Image 1 (cartoon, rainbow, N blue to C red):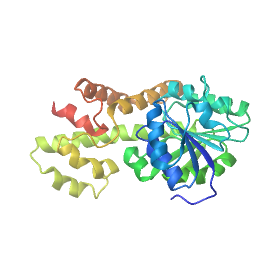
Image 2 (cartoon, rainbow, N blue to C red):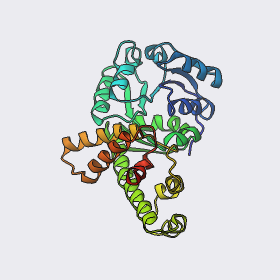
Image 3 (cartoon, rainbow, N blue to C red):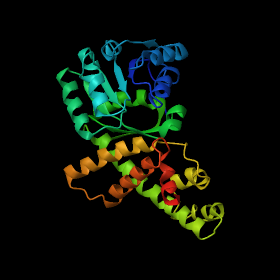
Image 4 (cartoon, helix red, strand yellow):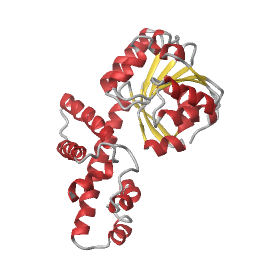
Length: 295
């Protein structure tokens, strides 16, 4: 869990459903001095009013004179925009500052930004998170990091303000690669759970009774424990959106093409999520694979 440490000067770029509460934890739980930037300035102003931090007009302004700069944006292009783009954070990042990227992005962009940070005398850690919106709001995210060990040890106490698990996976890009494995495992698990519930319904079984028994054995999983009730009820607004999962799986499959990994189930489930999108389920959560079977 998080631990108190000396107050630091921190910037946070990107106040979406994840970034907004994460930045809040850095201010309130971490006790840090926090400056925020968001593409929609009104949201940054709202955050500053709510948490008592400061809003900046550009990433460059937010990053100036900061010890730690966090980002949580949409994708590789958004990340490049707030770092190496016009008025990006890397225009003003100071020597010795640490840039911590919580975006789920490619390992390629992580390595690119690591090199760009080094050229400025600064440091970079790719630190994608798992735990979804609820994990961000409750400050219990799992954070998978890539970077130098010495830099990681400095950043870890600050990251712990919004996390319950923070681990260094290896050099730059390793955090993103670990997040890809996370999504590979989730894709297969959710499809298996969807098929199991679908089969049980067709067989005329009481799904609640079935799950109560099998969840205590080898079939048990976080997905089963936390999603079977809503899946059985046909409700799919309780977690990570299908659009975002497809973005992540696109990153996974592109990396697999590069490294030669064989991911037949992941590729198939990605196509199943495309079917869910065709049903209008873009913003449904990932457990909506069951809806595809029941259509």
